[in-house]
Length: 297
Image 1 (cartoon, helix red, strand yellow):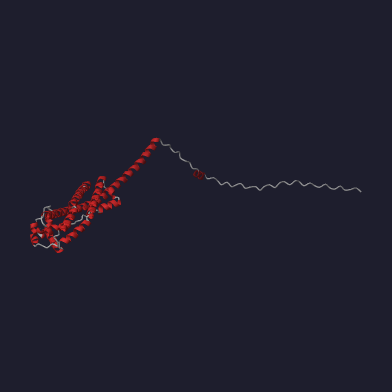
Image 2 (cartoon, rainbow, N blue to C red):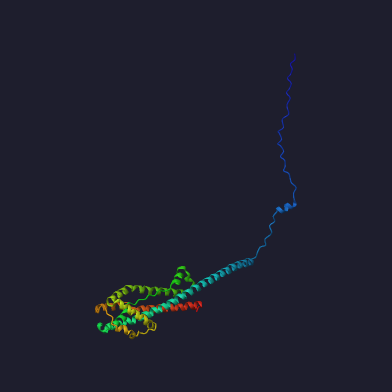
């Protein structure tokens, strides 16, 4: 029996690789010509400047800054000048008061010096007991003379502390500083004599009774002003009634009188007058300089 041949296997066609899914192409929107024109930026061509134009622009900027600087300086100068005028006005007032006070101070000590000199002359030429006691009271009173000069320095002190002194021209500022120093020196000199003044008063209290000292002082108050300001020696004859009353002394001890006279002499009343004269001269010159600088009467 014949064998059946196996039937040949049918070959399957080879599988084709799977195609990748198609990527949809982006949709193209219709173009808008006007929109495209707006999105495109056209930079205008810049015209190049010449060196002259650059120099002109630089010059204009420089002039603007420079003129602003000048305007600011003018404004500051004007402000400072106005402040200086205000300070000058108050300083003039201070100096007027100072000069008036110095004139009284000088006249007072000149008068005190004349009377103290008279006391010294009497004691050096005449026996104490031969001198009318009234004269010793009247002239001896001036050994304890005392007066202080108190400068009006509020304006200068304010200008110095705030830096406003720079508003004055340098020569004027130096002159004001010099005057301030002279005032300080004079004040220090007055204060340095305080201890001697106390000793003079102690010795005077050992010679003269206080009640007659008061009487003598009251008499001088009536007549002294006329002599103080005229720089004349007092007419002691006007005080004859007091002299003739022969008020008693506490002592005739020559050594005590000698100590008293020496202390009075050591007070250098003449030097006090010279110091005050110098301060007065400088105050007068400063006052004149300020008036001239700021055109005030």
